[in-house]
Image 1 (cartoon, rainbow, N blue to C red):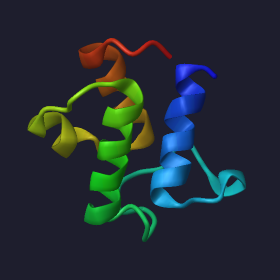
Image 2: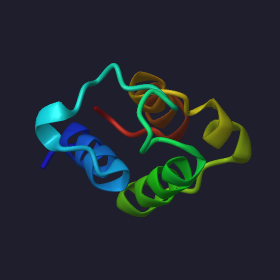
Image 3: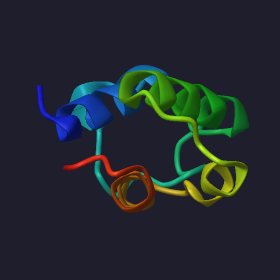
Length: 80
């Protein structure tokens, strides 16, 4: 499984979004499931899957699926 597949699956599982409804344009608070609690679940699961620890600023800046990929790629060296 590629890092992108893992990343998408963490979103689907953490936010309980049906995979057929998943969209890469997803943004924080755009769906009811991605509220503050969903956000922390997402962050926790990403840390576990990619064996990283997010800095507080990165958790706050993680505002969309696309922005999350940028943060993971640039700061944590996850290749997509």
